Image: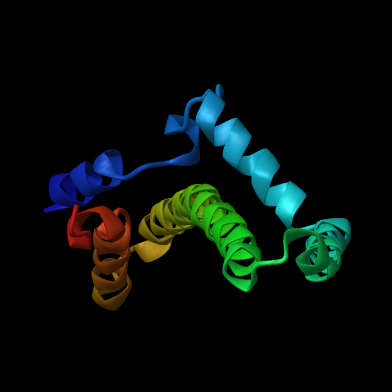
Length: 140
């Protein structure tokens, strides 16, 4: 039974399994996430609306005037959702990898101190089964 617990630990993602080099898109998504989370980005968005609002007098047509802001905000929102989702997914995976490492280390410690305690051995098995559970329960 101990081999099954070890196999599930080996199959789980651990922080040491994560490659040190991050891809271009991931770096870009992280930079975009940092950029969009700053107060001055919000100020830029407010400024965009403030510049757009009086532009009606230059454009003259309400339909064109509304189309400009609707198109601009839709494009920005669409792109930001994709970039921020990438950053969030990678952050979630990193947290999960850290939790897996903590659980595996705790299971090793519990096993070393279990001795004759059947209850502690059972808890150790359950903890080892929990490591990597997110991979087994995912829909992907």
